[in-house]
Image (cartoon, rainbow, N blue to C red; front, side, top):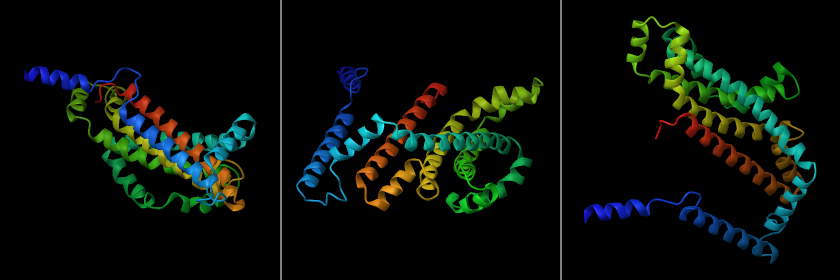
Length: 267
């Protein structure tokens, strides 16, 4: 009897492949209900239409952007800055994290520097980056790279330190060269936390990208949102925020997928 109850409980927790869960449907119903309420309140004047344009107007703005070439001046510059800055910061952070986690000598030298720079808000370093790199995207990409660098360093270094010391002892016994130790022990052992660091690094880089574009760029999603606020084009404001949220959501889903594919042995 007890076994039957357990089997029924387990079966009730299983969902058919591709079938939407109750939680997803609940979120969808709530979201649609809020949009309809917002539409009604804005159209009837319950809330100021100037500040809270109806979702239908925001949707028309989005359709116009993506049915013409307007989206290229909004989305592509943001994605380019994000891609270049994140790639530089994550790569440098991974290499530095491997060195800091593996070598105590490197850790003693690098850790005080990281501890000094890390608490500084990365946006506060933008004027200095403008002085060093001049105008253009180089200073923006540098600040974005910094935002991605630190989460990658700390997570990768922690991942290396959590590797079982017996693996290194076995490598020493068999006379494994350093390249083999890195390829067979360090990289696989640190990968779970390194990928977690990559996800955090991407989120930090994306936030900094949009923040930088608010005041120092002439294109990109952040610039669109800031310009919309200055000119009270609130339909552009909400449309820009929607696109930013959509990019963030899709990026998070992609990184989660890569995490599951690369770390299949993790629960």
